[in-house]
Image (cartoon, rainbow, N blue to C red; front, side, top):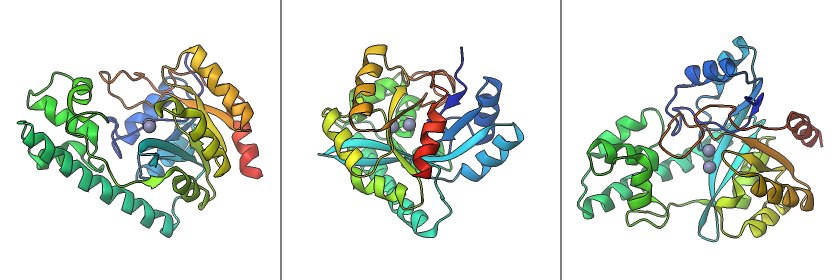
Length: 276
Ligand SMILES: [Zn+2]
Ligand SMILES: [Zn+2]
């Protein structure tokens, strides 16, 4: 059964493959009622998501997914209920995105050094309106026949341990949380198992003012969900969830919005935090 709630999905405004209109239509057609669009470091598609979502009878929560850092590792922080039109907020996001451009170019240079030259312009074309990110580079590698799948591109070359990985300038986890809170939003630690020292990151996020922790996430098995629920209780965080839908099918990700069940009380719990 499809979930009525999905608080984590991407459109072509970042590294998803579906334009926001198509994403909203798909979300409605699979039975979603409440959703958050959480593109990486951009709110570019939120106006449109709200418009199209409303016409389709969806409750659309304005969201984002910020890339931050903890001890040299990448940490993602989701933001919900953002007053995203705020000018200072937008200027800060622009800095994030410029960093991404520089990073993508550096990765392409490294790949050339490894004997896999790519046309950077082609990477930008694949990225479309979005800032170029690793999935776009992976797509370009696939196109040139250097790899067979996007997953393979990550595994062999551009994952965090890969030979073409480039560390990008990032804000700390606390700064990302602060940025979200600065526009009235709720910060939620995304897919917490992706960092090696999960409990330390959760504790730090809670202290920095995070409201929730992503628990019912993607393909997390039951025992992982239970572990995170324990941390949610310990640090007084709302357990949230979502599919992290990108529209791709070869990245080991869920293939439909709402494919991950998220408990119906989640939205009320978040709204209670908002009212605090
Ligand atoms: Zn993420
Ligand atoms: Zn995501």
